Image (cartoon, rainbow, N blue to C red; front, top):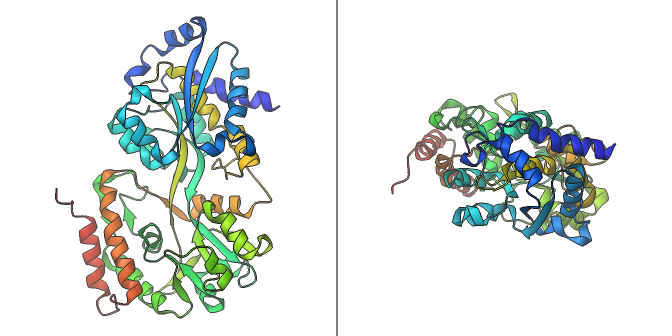
Amino acid sequence: MKSTRIMSAGISALMGLSLLAGCSSATNTSSAAASAANEGPITLTVWTPSEDQSADLGNWLDKELAAFQEAHPEWQIEFVKEVCPEGEVKDKLSKDAEAGADVFILANDNIPTLIQNGAIARLGGATLDQINEQNSATTINTVTVGDGVYGVPCAANTWFMFYDKRVFSADDVKSLDTMLEKGKVGFPLSNSWYIASFYAANGCTLFGADGLDETAGIDFGGDKAVAVTNYLVDLAANPNFVDSNGLSASALTEGTINCLFSGEWDYAAVVEAIGEENVGVACAPTYTLNGEEKQLKAFAGSKAIGVNATSKNPQVAVALAAFLGSTQAQQDRYDLRKVSPVDKTIKIADSEMVQAIADTYDHASIVQPLNNTMGQYWGPAQSMGEELVNGTVTHENAAEKTEAMNTTMNTAAVE
């Protein structure tokens, strides 16, 4: 049964011969596929993080490459496996795309730079169909620039909440206001990756509702934004609130905080801090603004499988990318490394963290926009958070401070 699913994923990637639309290396794909099967060995270079190639962690990459080769006896493939962290792909490929990997795992925020440098292929055809079938709209948008899709999502990259079950119940953590009544809430308010969640919850947008329209600009102004700033003035002053920016999971041990808003990377540290039996995991809660519940919206990104636009074997490279991002490959990666899948069809009943991530992408997140103008958001957002924490934003000046933040976010940086 497993081999049937794997073969299907690999073959489906080749059915649409327009899957590298817009990429000059994708011309005459049909004839290239025929020649690839007849010309002898094909060399494909693959980049992944070191953990995917670790024997101690089951060597996920070796497992998948062996299965891919078995599914495609028509190709004789020599795989060259190299280690490259997801966040470093753009720097390495931008220096010399032709000397880089054919297939790579990357952080989605690398995509704009790679497009600018002609180093990543646009995907289409059956590969795009696979992406659409496996993923939520939010996840798909994390690999979308303009009207093109540039990666096969394979893992989540967002934040959610770890909490101490001895302090908060599963019902408590649905509401930030309830949590503030029962324990110490640690939230990194002075960190611009997190503070946006309050504003997005009340209808503020970054480049449109889906984050894809750069011409729409940043809308963190007006009455809706001022109302959020006023709420945050009171939140920062609450004795049960702690700005947790810079705090580690050890703060849970000390009781400085009873919850930690972070991501999958902190799970082991949280377990060490309070014991696995005490660790609860949930998506971000709601908060009450002027009598209405608002769902906090975390920034959502992804880790994805990309294809080099200069690959000499584009049809095989795309087939492998689709394969490495398939449902079975994501399940294998979870089984071996506990990397939470982003594929919405995968259900892991005994994992609160996988469920929390799924809930986050489903209804508690917005896509982190992939455009150059997004760079104008981070500084003003951080300044607002810092001023809220140190008390220089008050109810008296909340409107003025909010509009100043919004204006700065929409003002192009001076060269």
